[in-house]
Length: 315
Image (cartoon, helix red, strand yellow):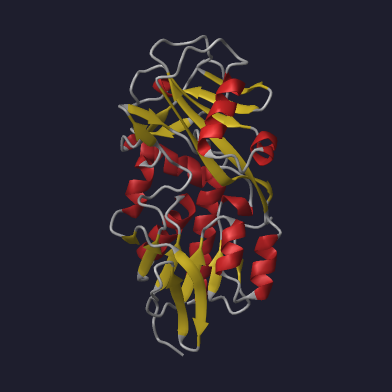
């Protein structure tokens, strides 16, 4: 058996970075592998033509004390702020990253070894540990444990070497989401924010109402899971036109100055795992994410903490 204590974490979103940060604080060597060019996962902001669109997770809320304390720290550091748009129900504190949704995650990533543009194709068990087969055809060195925080359907494929673990992950259901990002030269009569304001529309938010964003007539619209699933394989141009038609049912729209779409294949958990993390029988491969508990960012945070505790307890 290998004497390495190194841990690989797949995914640099809230869950992966929370886990990796806790492991590093426990004194374990850890390396994070992220397939995208930046951290954040679905805590995403797209910048285009001087505009900023939070096209993934819309805000953060806390139900438990640990995440509430973490959010308070992010606000105190200036990495996040309260968002209080007109149109959403009162009585719930909503927090966004400033100046973009990934800002609070920078604090978690500081000091970590994070490899970007490093997609993982498979986790490969060997006698002395685990290796990662990367998307570019190379393989990593040996790790004692691998923590996968990709969406459950992807994690099931990456961890296919353990049939029981992969089967448990494959039973998790996550709905897709088409997102429209649109800006106008003149503001139409759209609400600042709204939940389910019309058929096929799950959420609508005016980007300029968010702290630290450009004050411009720009909106993000999330389609419902049902609409997104029914139109999942549209090409981006067709999706843009169909989603503009949806938005146009709320108010007459002028010609957009900018419009683009993003398809999240794995967006909102509909059938969670039911526990904060999962592991192989030998404890060498672990998986987690928001999909373990529900569709909220807090669930990703809680899962990341649970994963780190499981790793530390098994080393």
